[in-house]
Length: 335
Image (cartoon, rainbow, N blue to C red; front, side, top):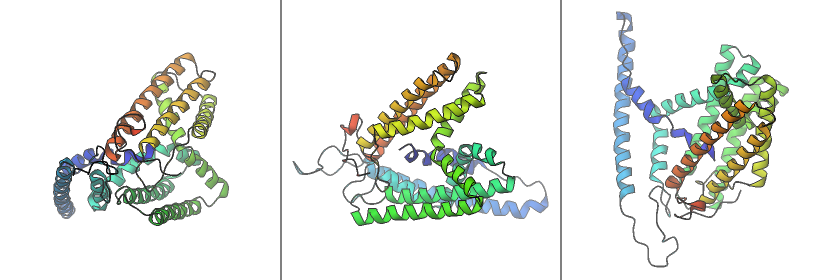
């Protein structure tokens, strides 16, 4: 659920950076390169102008009053202009899909994703003590895998709302085969079954590694860093809490469909249970000062998740209240 939201993060900042960049020639030898860069910049400006026009058109279409459905007609409740309609598309997701087809936008998003992935996999890179060339090669494989997932995800999200069961099954199969191909390339890179198994475990526990890294950053800034024993104990605690919360509150998901209101509610409930279990277990691992910082981190994380889910409700029509009761929440798709 949390992976559905961040891909547009930093898009506006990236645009501003792209427009603001101006190569300044230092010598005559750089004139040719500068001209090429300026030509590329001009092309990207034209592409941005076209995207702005498409965005304005989509916003105008989204703001138009919906057609009035006949009384007692199925689905005649309040409509969300961001949610896929019958045979229609979410304007926001259609706009994002269009951006992904634009070479300039795609390169910018890839650069943003590369920075995020570098942080997420930093502990893994340090564990294997990779050389600079090995890091570059490995991170390219990870980025290619991420961008391929994003492409199929956008294809699914911007597709018509009336996909047949066969179409959804085919898309799921394509996603599965795509991941298998990427993992085979990563396995070839490691060329060692034990190292690849370590990578697979790390990737499954990526959210917990990221949370632990964030916690330790805050603790270090407060002069209360985790020692090795505490780090291991907290990671194990986070992994176990995640397993327990998922078992107690399964989250219905379908990678070929936007998340329903009930799926968002389940994700929030799952996170609340997980964070409570972590806080309880951490009382015997952390000092009182460290535990207080952990609880502040958890409160901030839950607030960010609630904001993200509220945005998702607006985008996908899950309503604004529990279980999407204020909107056109679709039934939870089968797992």
